[in-house]
Image (cartoon, rainbow, N blue to C red; front, side, top):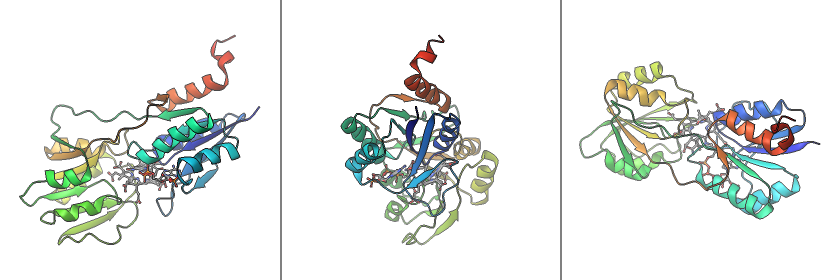
Length: 255
Ligand code: 3Y8
Ligand code: NAP
């Protein structure tokens, strides 16, 4: 009996989970990306790229492709797709499991300013000109045009087009993970005095947070959006165990 699993991905953990589940010969795993980046890294399992056309489109995909389990392993800030996944599985009756990466918690030495949105982050930078490292990607960078007094270092996977209408911005193209030593060198080289970040959780981009702490500089941290309440696990291993339990309840009892 083959179990057909669709993983909504776009994160480190989604790729790791896909690789882990694909090892079971009775699982047929497909990973889904939105198609946000020009050339995504290889995901190691069959890939489908592009939107589904809202929750209804996703529900139809689940039925048409006889999906037995939907796993939402998207990024904590990908709130729309997570809402669609919860709605589509409610509509279609297909089981859902979500991988919910815990957020980072501030530790001694962290200088975090918590804000609700990128727009609020722009305000939180204050009146005095700053040297700001924008590490929130391309989709929301333009809200910082409201604060043209600062000097920006903007990192994204693909180029920010059009460029920001601010007098002083430097663009960096890079795809994580980003280790702490390189993040510290980058922050020092550009004399950064404020980092704007999402609370992504996980290891891949914590380097900039630890580097900022080490250098005693401020982090303007954008709070996570609310996500739907569906069955979830915090790590790849825990989620994989729940998948096994779902399909092999007998094996679970070790009989
Ligand atoms: C298209 C797939 C893997 C996945 C790697 C993770 C780690 C590196 C950290 C910084 C922060 C940021 C951004 C980031 C991280 C991982 C992970 C993660 C942050 C790729 C990828 C896709 C995307 C989409 C992209 C967004 C952007 C966000 C850059 C691939 C590389 C800033 C989020 O239109 C756009 O340019 C959209 C870009 C959504 C946020 C934004 O709003 O701009 N991720 N990132 C996925 C798809 O098409 O479905 O290209 O290979 C995946 C990864 N990005 O396999 O190891 O697991 O989180 N991605 C944030 O956290 O702030 C970088 O620079 O410090
Ligand atoms: P989003 O705002 O939650 O979703 C917007 C729309 O994009 C969705 O309604 C859906 O289109 C499509 N979509 C999103 N993720 C998809 C997926 N995995 N497979 C198929 N369609 C998808 O999403 P986002 O924040 O732009 O993130 C897009 C992708 O980048 C996700 O895979 C996410 O995991 C990854 N990512 C995002 C961030 C971030 O900071 N947001 C960081 C790292 C990685 P339809 O409505 O047409 O179905």
